[in-house]
Each structure stands twice: as structure tokens, then as C-alpha cells.
Amino acid sequence: MSDPMATPPPPPPPAAPAPGDNRTLMLVLAYLGLLALVPLLVEKNDTEVQWHAKNGLVLTIAFIVLFVVLSILGAVPAVGCLTVFLWPVAGLGWLILSILGIVKATKGERFVIPGLSDFVAKF
Image (cartoon, rainbow, N blue to C red; front, side, top):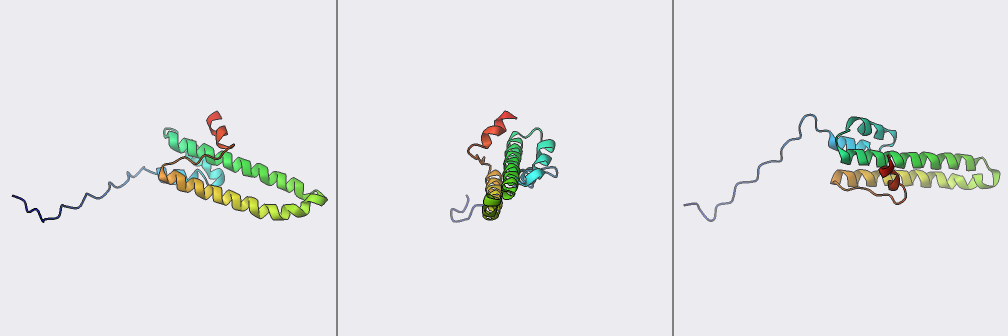
């Protein structure tokens, strides 16, 4: 008969990731600018990594377009002075959205950006 006061054995430790398991790395790379091309080209069988890579790539392209527009507006004499204040806001916005995307991706959730994530389904 077993002792009712005895503590149960501890649960077994989680299984170590397989040597080729780089899913978390690929999810992080998906939101680091043009490095999103790495998981897009390497992890062709993982649909979740593919979605995050496409989402990160759309986010990067959107901010490249925004930076080009800010550069063009910076050349206009009357508006150019205001773009000095918009550059840090745009850069900080890109950083915040990238960090949010990485955090959600590593938790197993999708980071849907209204307006931008609609393009992910198109390609």
C-alpha cells in the first residue's frame, strides 16, 4: 500500500527541441525588417511561420513607403520642418509594432495590423 502523505513524483522535464527546430528563431526573424525573407524562403512547410514572415514583410514595406514619403515631404520647404518631428515617431512606431509582432508570434498568436494584414492573404 502506498503512503497517502507521500508527494507525487515531479513531472518529467519538457522535451528538448530537436536539433533542427528553429521555429522560434524564424518567428523572431519574421519581424526584423528584410530578414523576414529568411523564414519566408526557409520554412515553406510551416504555415504559421509563413504567415508571420509575410506579415513582417508587409509591415517593413509599409514603413519603407512611409520613410520615402517623409523624405519627399522633407524636401518641400513649408512642410519639411514638420517632418523632422515625424521621423522619430515613425521609427518608434515601427519598433513598437515589430516588438509586438515578435511577442505575439512567440506566444503562438497572430498579430493582425488593421489595413496591412489584409495584404498577407493576397500573396
